[in-house]
Picture (tube, rainbow, N blue to C red):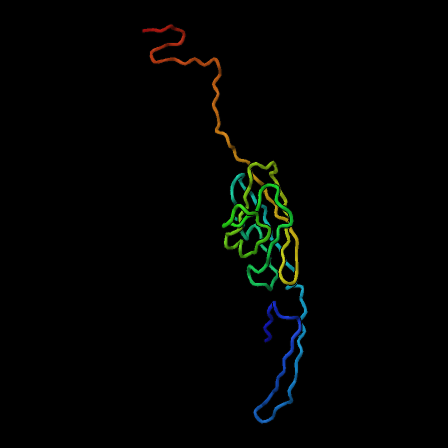
Length: 178
């Protein structure tokens, strides 16, 4: 078995000898050439639309955004936001004021990536382009989201002007009856 690590070159060689204890074959060099396969080079993206309440912070989950290339260790792919969201921004949980442009799948699993839905924005539906990459390939996709409006004013009750308020002991249509 030949272990291949992503940081290695795509070709390698090693020299060996074979012996049965009595006879030994001359030293031989074996050259190995590795080529990418479609299973390890292509990246498969899964997205699910986000539904976020206006003014809230929403933790991004792997159910909403994930990618795999079939060979990179879990969390080994990196996401890059290609255009700023119109309905808010992505941020790292530890530094919520600074918009985040790039994060890993491990950041998502660790609940470190949040989307902050800004209530002052007029945009309620957004489609955010992103790319995802590993050491060999890049793929592109969109995160779709809907920002749900939240009422900011308390409901008011208005009374009709024909309403008559009676004090204790009064009857409608009578003057102060004592």
